[in-house]
Length: 334
Image 1 (cartoon, rainbow, N blue to C red):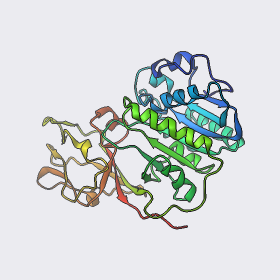
Image 2 (image 1 turned 180 degrees about the horizontal axis):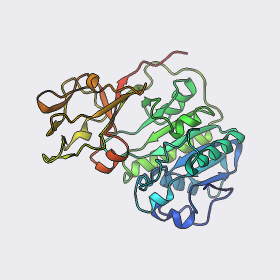
Image 3 (image 1 turned 180 degrees about the vertical axis):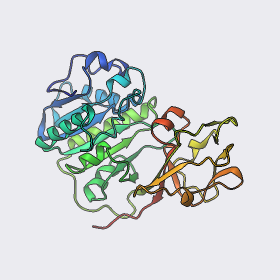
Image 4 (image 1 turned 90 degrees about the vertical axis):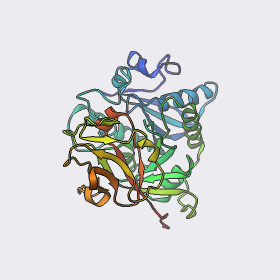
């Protein structure tokens, strides 16, 4: 399932995401030489409708057409078949950012294992996974370890950093066993600033000789910890400004993203008395009643928390989640 090549395919610097499947046979790992041999690893297009990573890499490589790269670069191009249809993933496909785990013997898991082993052998320097999101969110970096090299790598992208350990199977978590790893959330795909921000960040990382192991100053970043994931039950009808559903969500709910919300903040209305959201903490426990109140058929926060990734895209809510809940976290001093 995986194609491995050691040079850019003709046309790669100009190809649109929707036409990647005409250029590549499927998921492809591209190894490019650079002045320092330990490669920077970049994964792009794990979700076929998230195009910033491709555009950022194209912009970066155009700047180096006449020069050697400062460091070797390995680019994993993920779900090109979903990209052809501008979909996160196709029906029947695994989510390409949930396959990076040893559990599973299907093609997608075998492919991710092969990518990991390739990069282990090449002594990968650092890993960057580039994503977009559909709601109103700032740019931020995510990490799966609080070790200083991870927080320092994330801080180069911006002040807002999110630490999470669930869900399993994400690319950054798998690579965190090999090297410092971050996930970049670059806003919505159509935003040109997201492309520029990601491209310049990748270039900055390419130029690093090393990543310091000295802890950051306590107030140098705004650090948040994901404490729960909120999903819509599969058998629950939902929508926005629609009272013919079981759950009616606020039509501007994504404006709550990355704003610390007090207890009592209303997220929606129940039109079916026993309808409930699913809320799972990092230990895999159902914690719905801890974080939500359903009195008087209103869905309200029971505790002060900060939501992220709230979106108005119903397909994304079905395929992924409604949101994550976060709390502010003090910087550990190692």
